[in-house]
Image 1 (spheres, rainbow, N blue to C red):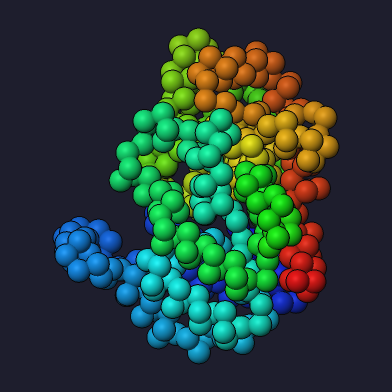
Image 2: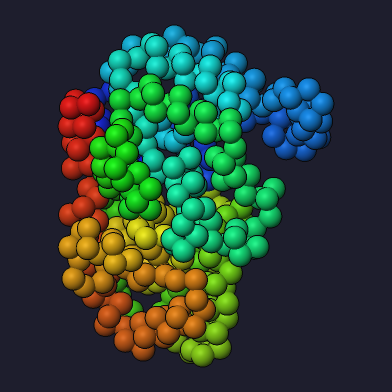
Length: 367
């Protein structure tokens, strides 16, 4: 998201630097990459033992040292934008020390809500009926240890961090409707700015269906149940038996971002996630390529963007429903082509990275 925003801002004549992690195997490009140290193997075991015995978090301390070492590079900016409420993956003490520097040494600081944070997690635990990643956890599919990056926002330390951040930021911006919903009526919330997509990177091509319909399912094992991959896999097993002569299913697991977005080039249908109201980044880029994406496309999404004809398939955690929707598309390939065209047009109209960069500049100037 921030790389695409950076490209838009640069094209409009601004200087932009990204500081952060590469997000594990996804290996996102970062100007000043941070490394989360002592986070695997024997060193992680030592770190956890020290943490349990003394309360000292070695990884947080080492991240703080990486930022501290490069402090001269991270001051006197017109704008700093935080990707979430735990941008540096540190504990409360070191996260606050890092943030305090950014708050004091830069002109304006904004917060983006585009993932797990205190308001989002609090809202979804209080509203378990709301379509969100909390649902598979409450259903017992995800163990606490594998949900720690979400559950931490329910602790007193991260509630405290949340309030500290909100006291010091200029305002908070949501990147899609899933994060907009919990923030409504908050005094620091100024609204939703859609994710920017660099459409220059995705050539406009017409989807062709010559032989079999190709369905792509990209799996990230760390978020397997969060995305509803269990429902997609069960539905695909039925579809492959039902239409052996009509479909080809491509599955990939834990591949770097650049590899991932190229692997589904030959696909007609992309399976993204079942627990969202709106589209995340993978879905939007697939739509930019004219793919028919199973993702969040709830009524609130269609109403917000005044959509009257489908630009994506609203995915639900229901195998029979997914099989029904896939079957309809397989039996009606012209509908695949129609949705493909509308998906691309939607991205051009609502997510063009230059238009979005201009919206950010307006907000940063105003607040």
